[in-house]
Length: 283
Ligand code: C2E
Ligand code: MG
Ligand code: MG
Ligand code: MG
Image (cartoon, rainbow, N blue to C red; front, side, top):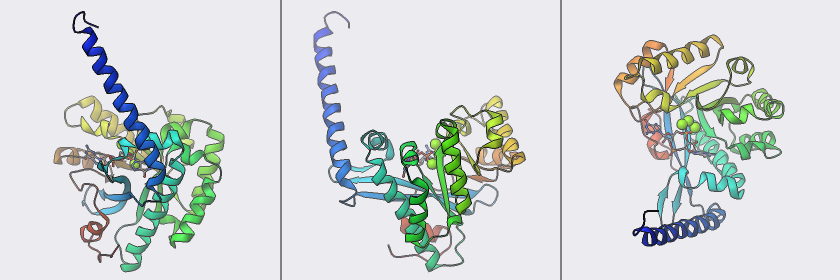
């Protein structure tokens, strides 16, 4: 602390810290009640064919319609939900709601061009006992086919307690559900692991895509991941594509799928069917 400015700065710091803690505590308390109060909503971001730009799937992204603070993105509450255990209820709601919505779109238009809905699963949610059964039940309750569901998990989850986690991943794939590794490249998967992992899709993290136009090295890295995935019979989605140059490069690398603001932002449910050329479904 600088002398002179010291005391005032320290007190301001303490009071900021106090405010932050009070806010966290308030969020944490209301988080537990927010599911019952139906304050969570889902947006859906299209995942597209990089070449044709046609949507092939959507990713469900949760938001909290907070009564005082407005629409909050996941960065404001997912970690808190993990710490407090509220993620169990929240995750179950997200899965059920995404499947129900997808089944409704499909019922309204059996020719629906969208093949799947992608749902993020947090590590704690996945590790809770009975996860596979909960997925099975959620599919049945929504009248959804297993191939409509892609579950996104993180690299670190696949690497820790591999035995237990891999057994559950295999059980999910036996149901017909597909598995994606989200934010691929930010963790520590080794190449030999990648060959054996019971997963179907790699989602290359946005941080890799950001620099592909400016950096030759970054381009080489993404190119290598795309080639590797193809040779291992894995599908690839490039995340966070924001401009045409990035798309052009990815197309030339043979990256099949992409997601990003260039194609579409996360959308409210009613805006999804018009975008993919299907009948609109009332919520
Ligand atoms: P994610 O799964 O990697 O999702 C992609 C995030 O990148 C989304 O942020 C999306 O809105 C954003 N994004 C997509 N394209 C672009 C782009 O071109 N530029 C930029 N700047 N951003 C883009 P969002 O919705 O804020 O979600 C953040 C993270 O929160 C997600 O990252 C995911 O890890 C987590 N999350 C979201 N929904 C859920 C959920 O239902 N359950 C769990 N456990 N986690 C969730
Ligand atoms: Mg995701
Ligand atoms: Mg992601
Ligand atoms: Mg990401």
